[in-house]
Amino acid sequence: MLIVLSGPSGVGKGTVRQAMLADSFKDFKYSVSMTTRKPRPGEKDGADYFFRTKEQFQQHIADGEMLEWARYVNNYYGTPLGPVNATLDQGQDVLLEIEVNGAMQVREKCPDGVFIFLTPPDLQELKQRIEKRGTDDAATILKRMEKARNEIKMMENYDYAVVNDKVNLAVKRIEAIITSEHNRVPRVIDRYRKMIGV
Ligand SMILES: Nc1nc2c(ncn2[C@@H]2O[C@H](COP(=O)(O)OP(=O)(O)O)[C@@H](O)[C@H]2O)c(=O)[nH]1
Ligand SMILES: Nc1ncnc2c1ncn2[C@@H]1O[C@H](COP(=O)(O)OP(=O)(O)O)[C@@H](O)[C@H]1O
Image (cartoon, rainbow, N blue to C red):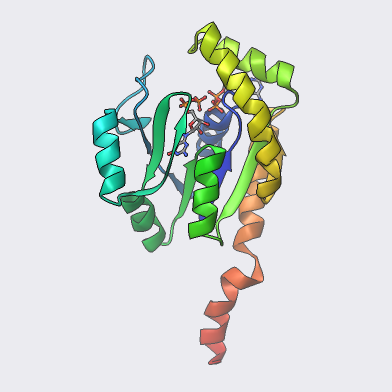
């Protein structure tokens, strides 16, 4: 199953994903994105992102190697297609943590994906989280906040909206969604059709 997690910058997507792994809900593979943004202190190439130049990124697009891509605050971000297909072929879930424009491209290509939007309790709390993280200068924070308003408008294009008030609660909500989605009849019926020979 393809799971897409979006939400404004600083809402806590990375935090929630890591908490899901720590909560031994490990039955998914995180899709490492490619970006032209500079690594933040502590970020590792190949683990947090594949850090590439603009020229390299554009070549990957031209070669048809991206499932989706978007520009976000002056940088390119995108999902390499190969690892996503490989994970799905192995029968494992894959989690994409991507912004809204990329998510809509994935929606077109993979309509049976599960689209989850992570929301902040309110915008004041969102600003405080970005500031607390301490990775962005004042001008970037302003841009990210402006973008956040537009992103929240896009929530209506998602299947689920999860409030990240407390990390452990958000994690439980997302895990409940994933578990329910796995049990939806269209996802399991083929196996039973084969079993009863129809
Ligand atoms: N479309 C798209 N967006 C991505 C991808 N990877 C990350 N993003 C999004 O790009 C935005 C900026 O990411 P980043 O600079 O790491 O900031 P952060 O998410 O606020 O820590 C976030 O909304 C990410 O979810 C990707 O592969 N494709
Ligand atoms: N539920 C929460 N309550 C309080 N702070 C949070 C919560 N979730 C995340 N944070 C904090 O908010 C900041 C941004 O989180 P991060 O996971 O980097 O967001 P994103 O990946 O969406 O940009 C971090 O400092 C993180 O510790």
